[in-house]
Image (cartoon, rainbow, N blue to C red; front, side, top):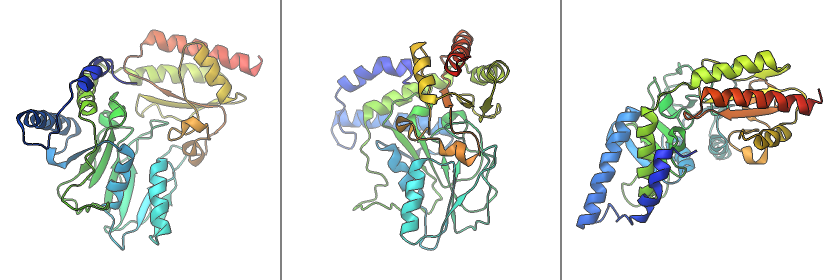
Length: 339
């Protein structure tokens, strides 16, 4: 959901007709100065240097660039069973091309179980999960690290050393179609894409979307955040008022995500019933929710994959809305169970 502050300005940003910041005329110069100011703003918010930031119009491509740009010919690649499907795709590509690839298991709390990883290897590390909100502890390995920050965003910045990272504008209620790739200045990173110059990314991002994302980020950070409190209220209600429900989300995780599985209820019917009551929830994998496939994250955690719904709690949500949702959820479950 796009932040209201960015949504109100987005038509104006697109209507302005921005000149190419790379050109030398005066208008382009002004656009370039504005772009650099935005870069400085993002650098401060993400706790990185401004020259370590690359804007991307294809956020999913950022996974490929962040990972393959760090791999050496003899590096082993380690990722986890709860990573995003795009990471699975990169890992599968590397494996098919002869690289040693290892999928790390997680425990029932969703914590990644590290194995022996050397300094020459690359570890993909998810800061927080986009379905459950569960937070990972810092990796113990001394290997190269790609930090997946696409779900955690500015709500939880990495507290460990990493060489590359990827953020998604949507994580702070910014527009879709904008990713921020971090390449640390001391990282021995090489552009894995065909290229003829020193550019590190395609540079095809939209300046209006970049402006909208910067507006969203500024307002997002300024807003009060009671989502952890609301999440706990949801968990308390669900676990005491609705029988046979398993919560996959730890209360100490990110406040904006909650995943539950309800026994003897079909998730698609529950989604439709809640939608009629005015509430939008999701089911299946957060990476591919459109096809309603069971969540690979819950399967990896040995949690029930049927009757699963996922809630994204936005900063605009109030206690009144949470109470109304709880009542609607209880009524829907009772009806669908035929009680």
